[in-house]
Image (cartoon, rainbow, N blue to C red):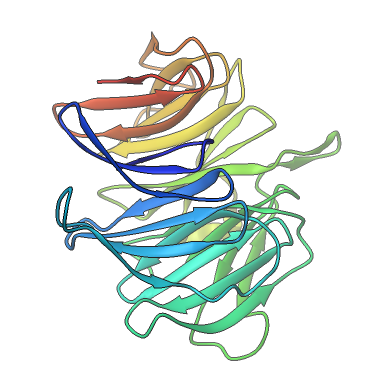
Length: 269
């Protein structure tokens, strides 16, 4: 599946493309379940739809999620049957993917919610916001704001850098955050208040993250891909590639493949 600023959701088999739907605005987020043929697409016009993807002729929209906010959706994540969608109003809408119902809306004074992460090793959910903070949420806490921790991850006396992307580093209790301040930071969720365990300063703003074992891979505003080894104390990257002519907006890392999608409209494998 691919989604773009033209609002089109497209299913690909090799070079064969089938347009599943054309939204009224750019699609900001696309999630695909790792175990089930289910996908979630969120657009800037507030439309959020669940799809069952069975093929070019059998893929169907199974639900449109009722909006928890009138603001454009910017990011999403899910784990099991709980789906979270963050928006420009600073709200996080929580949905049940089984009943497709709105469970609640979480809100903190943070500006835009620009990144969300559901980790495999923790029960909490993590958001990154325009104010440069990471927030940890526990859906078991009732009320408007089940926020259990707020970390000033990308804030300094010079200002705040929006936390544009988050990733879980497999094989441990580590997560990574990328900020508009140009820093990649690694955090141990077992002692999140102790500060970052790794801090990498990049030449250009990182726009996306992927993790493969202890390796943290980032794509930046200049079209480069950088790889850092989070087990090493070195602050420099292990390797870098010139991938796209525009900013790298999305990455997917597998043991034998690396996929990069950029502002130049190209997907490179």
